Image (cartoon, rainbow, N blue to C red):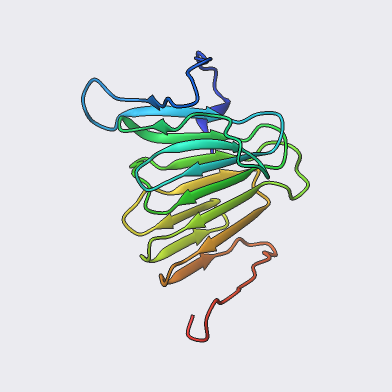
Length: 178
C-alpha cells in the first residue's frame, strides 16, 4: 500500500505540555477532514489507538508514556510511523477514522514490529496482498513493515485473502466453539 508518510511534510513538534495535559486536533469545518502523522522514537514504542480515536505512545515494556493523549475529533486519516526499535501497534477495528489508519513499522525488519488488531465483534476481512485489515463498517488498517499481525475477532467472523505466494497464517481459537 502506498502510504503518503514518505512525502515531505512540515513537522510540528510539541514540547513541555505537562504530564496532565492532552493535545486535540480539531477541524475548522467540524468534520473529520484532516490527516495526522504520529511518529514514534528510535527505540521500541507501544502505539495505542482506541474507539474514540485517542492516540497515545508508551515506551515499550514499561508504563511510561512517550506522548500525552492525542484527541482526534477532526482527523479523517491517521498515519503511525514506528521508525526504529521493536514497535507494537494496538489498534481497534471500530476506530473513527473514515479514511483509515496506515501503519509503517520501520526498522529493523527482523520480525520485531507487531500489529495487534482488536475487533468489536463485526466481520473482519484480512487481505495479505494489499496488507490491510478491515472490520465491517469501519475504515481499513493498512500496514507496511509489520512482521506479525495478531487479530482478536471478539466473536466476529474472519476472512483471510492470501497472496499468490506462500503465506504463513496461524489460528489460535480461544474456546471450543470459536
